[in-house]
Image (cartoon, rainbow, N blue to C red; front, side, top):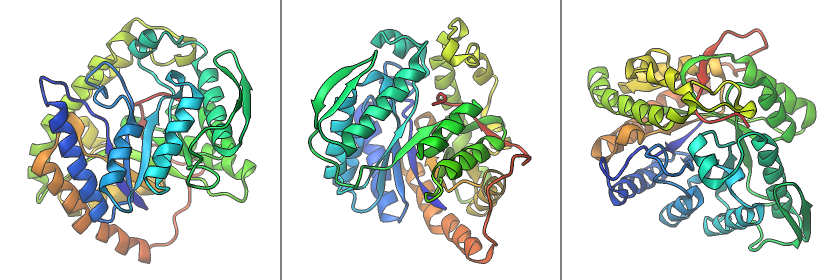
Length: 376
């Protein structure tokens, strides 16, 4: 398995200054690089403490690239419906060059009504806009003199500069939540799959559908699934819970606040999202720990949690959300150090002795469900 750090800012000027937030997370990125972790991931959101400190994950990843040597960089996720594909493809190619070919690009459909309202993008029809934009970005990164004519954008003979450093382009990932057809589509596209399990039961047949669809359409390729989950490792289980729970509860509070507009919003493209805030408002830190969708404990306990999660979900990597609820500073650095020094070696030792895992079948039992974000 591959591991990395994942960031979804949930701070505001009242809780943590932007300068303090970025100083802390860049410290964590350098530590992750020095510790041999595989990825740094950053999301994109606007106008709210839930994600609002990072309106441009590519800008953030360019700063990370300048301060690290080998760790790979991934947007988690960029929101194509709010971008013109020529700009997005150009920025992707620029960061790919700055990083020496370390960039990977995660895409997601936006799902917060206030963002759609602000950018004057209709929520209904956003799936088609998302797919058209991702397809155009792919063409712009792999072709020259590209012409597109869609209901959302049009351009002729466009050749973006710089050209990608990786050939033919940086790898693409797409996020999905709960719609089976989304998992099928991502498999057909040949992209990697990003999931964010948060507190509910997840039918593992969804990732099995992705793998089956990928295999059917890309038999020479390799499907990839990565999950993002909160992590806090401390010397003892009790200390880990004492550190984690206030920050997990703050993360849930800020997230629920961002979902307030879903109490009244209805969209055909987001049929199951109305009232989502009510669901999140019922969750607590204890729920996340109990469902195995937040990994909190001593190194031995966390290693055991990861093993049990992997038995159910059979993912190829986990990206650890380490800034939840404003968590940061020396405690966050120590948590990542303990994972790198004492948890990962246990997992590596098990991997060398355990039989090869197989993806869950269509009748597999359920695991924890992705609820954050939006289906692709």
